Length: 292
Image 1 (cartoon, one colour):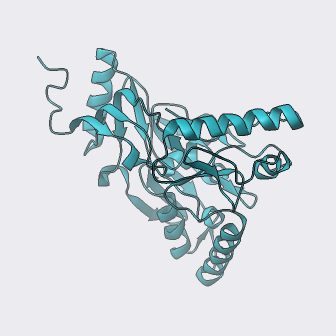
Image 2 (cartoon, helix red, strand yellow):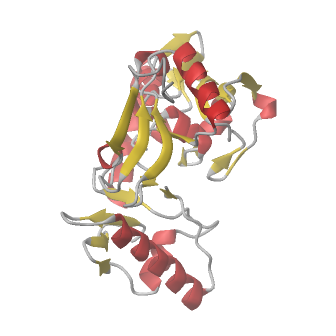
């Protein structure tokens, strides 16, 4: 009997992962799946647990570098409508973990609900935003989250109420395999004012960091009271390159890749950034970019 008996219709072998990430780099997933329903996902995850197959979940891919050697086991992407729906009921907005964060923000603003508008322009999915407690301008997604639904590595579905979830700078306690979705309790506000606020935030973001585009990624979390970009500039690395990967001109905390770049180029450049800031300034930068 095949390892994937019963799942043949959703499993692909040797799937290139580069096209699923913003950097467009890296090797292949040994197996790749896009489940079409919650039940299908639950069965697949439980099957992997029983078969000792390692599982990873990929979202928008804006914060992932896949190594050139690829990824063993199964990579799951929750792109089906079952995982991307957004709904509004009164002052509460619910969103699937696979929904784009930008769609959640624009839906809330359109419905005259305030709280998430400062997160405009942050790439990725709702699940990724929750896992990393996406924040900007003094507002974070965690402060508006009323509950989250998650799935464990054994396929068990759990509800996490607000008082069970810990949100802090750049992270949360939502560390289960899958964040299926969440509900956000927001505040009523004037739609035109919210729209103006959202547009202003978008303009400010565009001036402070590179536009959200493929082939570019943010590397480190900002240390408290400092910015990683300033520290990297202080040690003279702005514009520095290794191979076809270089530190972006617009912000030293972004790496931009050119045609012919490899994941090794990016990883070596990241290590040089980290080690030079540590050796020169005594600050240990914490990587925001996840390396698979």
